[in-house]
Length: 357
Ligand code: NAD
Ligand code: IPM
Ligand code: MN
Image (tube, rainbow, N blue to C red):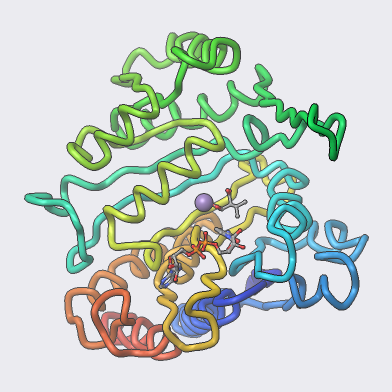
C-alpha cells in the first residue's frame, strides 16, 4: 500500500483549527479508499515558535521538508511578530526555496455558496487563476538608503526573468489547451513599461505554439472591474505574483468568501514538494473561537489529492463541500450557520461516506 508522507505546518491563528479539519477529511478518505495511506508529520513552526527561538523555522527546516510528498500549511502571521519577518521566514521561503512557481487558485462558485453579485449563477464563476509564484513583485530585491534621514529612500525591484515568465505562461496555455478553455492574460503594460511589456511579449511568443487556445488580454484594473461586473468572461487566467494575490482575494469575495478559497503552490517538475493551503491568513479577529470556516483548507486537500493522481477523490471532496453548502445544516457563521470549525470536517466526511455507500 502506498503511503503519502505529508509535512503539516498548521501555523498561526486559525491555521491549526482549519488544518485539523483537513487532516480529519484526508485520514477518513485514506481509510475509505483502502489502497493508500497518509502519514502526517507536524511541525510547530510559526510566530509562537519565533518568539521562543528567534526564527520561524529551524535553520535546517527546508532540508527537513524536502523529502515529503507534500506540505499542508494553515496560515502564517500574527500580531507580535512583524509580517515581513514571519512571512519571509516561512511561507515565502518555502514557495521560493522549493521553486513552487505555479500558484493554482480556483475561483469557482459552488451551488449553495453565497455570492454578493446580482444575477450571477454558478456557471458564471468558474475559473482558475494561474498566479506566478516565485519572482515578479515578490522577489523582494531592494534596499533602504539613508535610513532615519529626511532623504530616506526605499527601493523594491520587480524581477521578471524570461525563464520565470515563460514557464508560468506556458503552464497556463497547457492548462487551457487541456481543458479546452479560454486564456486571459492579466498585466499592466501601460504603466509598467519594462516588466509588464516583457511579460506581454512572452505571452504573445508562447501563444504562437498554441493556436488552438483562444486568448484575450486585460489590464489588471479592468480585470478587477470585470471580476465583479462580468466574471463569466474568465476561464483560465494567468498573471503576475502580486496581481494574482490581489485578484484571488477578489475572486474569493465573489465565490463564497475567504473561508472557501484554496490554493496549490506547485513545483510541477516534482523536484521539490508542493504546498497546499487555504489562501486566507491567520484571521486574528476570529482566532481561538471556533468560528473559522475550514472549507478552504478542505478544498486544498482536494487539490493535494489531484496532485497525487487521486483525482476521483479530489472531485468527490468538492462535491461533498457542495452538498454541505446546499444542505445548509452544518455551516460556520461566515456562511450564515452556527456550526463550529470542528463540526465541518466531520460533516464533510459523513457526506463522503454517505455517497460512498
Ligand atoms: P485574513 O485572511 O487572515 O483575514 C481577512 C478577513 O477574512 C478577516 O475578517 C477574517 O476573519 C476573515 N477570514 C479569513 N479566513 C477565514 C475563514 N477561514 N473563516 C472565516 N473568516 C475568515 O487576512 P489579514 O487579516 O489581512 O491577515 C491576517 C494575518 O495573516 C497577517 O499576519 C497576514 O500577513 C497573514 N496572512 C497569511 C496568509 C497565509 O499564511 N497564507 C495569507 C494572508 C494573510
Ligand atoms: C497569499 C498571502 C501571501 C501572499 C502573503 C501572506 C505573503 O496573501 O497567499 O495570498 O501575498 O502571497
Ligand atoms: Mn493573499
